[in-house]
Length: 156
Image 1: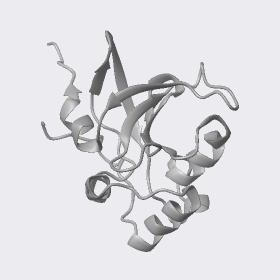
Image 2: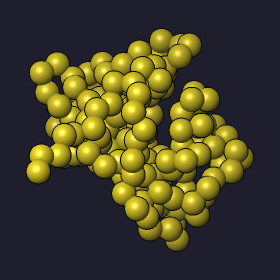
Image 3: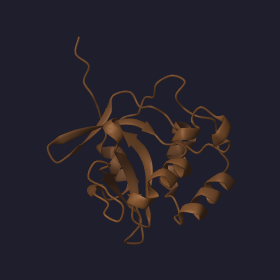
Image 4: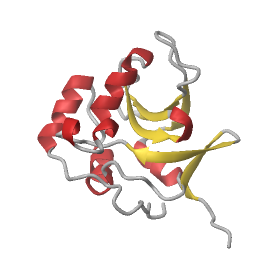
């Protein structure tokens, strides 16, 4: 896995373990440790030219969601995981939680429904409806997902 570079100034403030536990309690999940470790240096960051393949399509990560303790008074507050989850939870199944925004309104989510290590799915906002979510499998784990990320080639 290559190092993910982020746009300058896009990474949010540090967050407390207590806040993560509050979010986990509200959503009813337990984030993987690999994800928490990643977020300690990438909280809300906008990656530079990072994409992944799903079938024959390439999807661009717009930004990783964030843990923002004072989300009402922080510019990254609208990207707080719990805030985003609360806006789309009626179109998700129980045990599914967004963690990254993709271009055009879709989200990458953890899928905890099978128990154990959560898989990574793409939630399609256009196809999802209340009580009828639409997911595509992306990776078997967060680590596998990070390994699959590619940096776009910038031509001169």
